[in-house]
Image 1 (tube, rainbow, N blue to C red):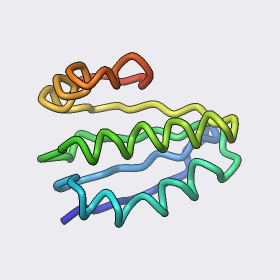
Image 2 (cartoon, rainbow, N blue to C red):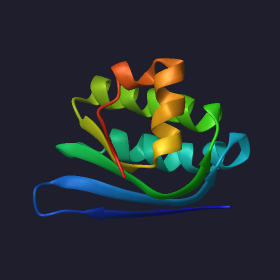
Image 3 (tube, rainbow, N blue to C red):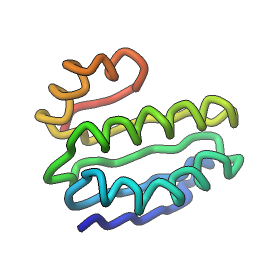
Image 4 (tube, one colour):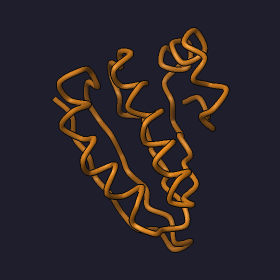
Length: 104
């Protein structure tokens, strides 16, 4: 189960809070909304991952796809509150080299 909440902030960014487990099934459920937000014309897209209790390679692949869509739309993607185990997985997969992230 995954929960997604999006709020436009005062600095013209969209802040998205994800909570729950991010795996193959839940990543497919949130990808359309994240894709829509990436192309919304906002200055930035901030993904707050502090509520993520589990994230497999499907979730990290989702972040990479959203990152590429943001780049095409001229939107800056930032990940914040990234749990330490997710940071470690991103480093193993090499995703940390492209994604701007901050550990929880």
